[in-house]
Length: 153
Image (cartoon, rainbow, N blue to C red; front, side):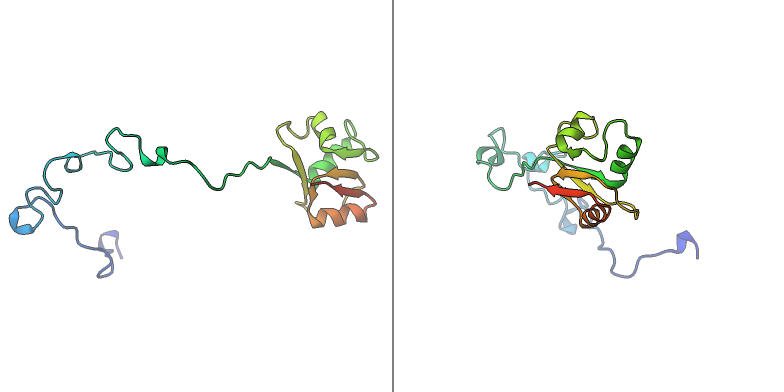
């Protein structure tokens, strides 16, 4: 088999109607575009254009779904464990909240919520957390290790 031998299955492609090939072809002279006007010319901006009049999509009021949820920062259990293990900024005995994480420059200021998620299969850490959410596996690991998670909405 060679590349020049590859063919489409019969009926896979519609045959293109050649335009502007004389009156007998039914698409001759104006090639199905009618006479003169903007739509007969090439490169016409037809979609939504109303000849200089304000288009309908700008005249009508906008309604419907518009979500303005605050962004949620996802903190992994592995990253939290690294932060707590070096002991420079946070310790395991203090309560860890969003405000504390933002003060220590762990979570950027634009985030209004923190969720703790699990990425690796390791045992949990003993920590006292007061955050907005945690996955089920994180909750189980931390409570098993002797820590506590309090969630707020």
